[in-house]
Length: 278
Image 1: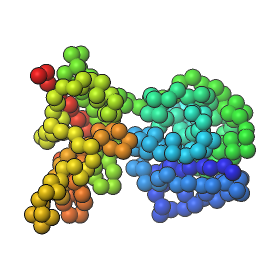
Image 2: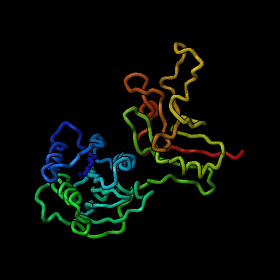
Image 3: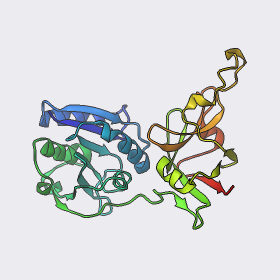
Image 4: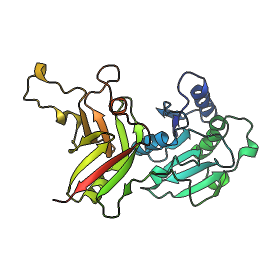
């Protein structure tokens, strides 16, 4: 039985998600459809890239991932299908898959060329569903597109490292529902530059000298609960996906606030790590 995931910026108010699911069920009656997210910020390729990179590998091999973000077809935004590590991806060639491809080499990429056989102006519904159904039935990528070797990258995807390795500069690539700020600095890369040195993390006018292993590590549990004042304290962790994250303990935008709003950090803002020799 085919599994198809959906990641879009459609939201749930309009009919778009329901229409795509209905079309998939019409094409493949026994398909299992899984929503990864429909709350990607409109046209945010970077958010979509982060979400799909950290979700796809939890699914069984053979899963087909349909990504409907910034998917309107034009001469600078072609449609592609990719086979990678036993999974299939269908989306626009706008950088969404470049984050995955920095860590895993694709097995095959095609530029989809069936548009002349499809009528409509809603590419996820009109084109991506047809391609997903073709793959689910065992069809090969060559039938629905021409092979290409490279995909469009996302600008500033990788952190910058100074020539003397004393400074690492990353960017905010995702802000979660807790208002926590995720950067493009991964733990393995951080440690390869750090090499055991002391460091200071700078985010606007906020400084951090420690990276916690979990959010609650900031709490001193020896202090009676009524005397603690930990909610809303800033901290840095490597999150469950091993990305450097700036957070507020038990953050809530409605009460104590969150890292993004209280620290003034937005998408693509820089976060600097300064390393010190002992």
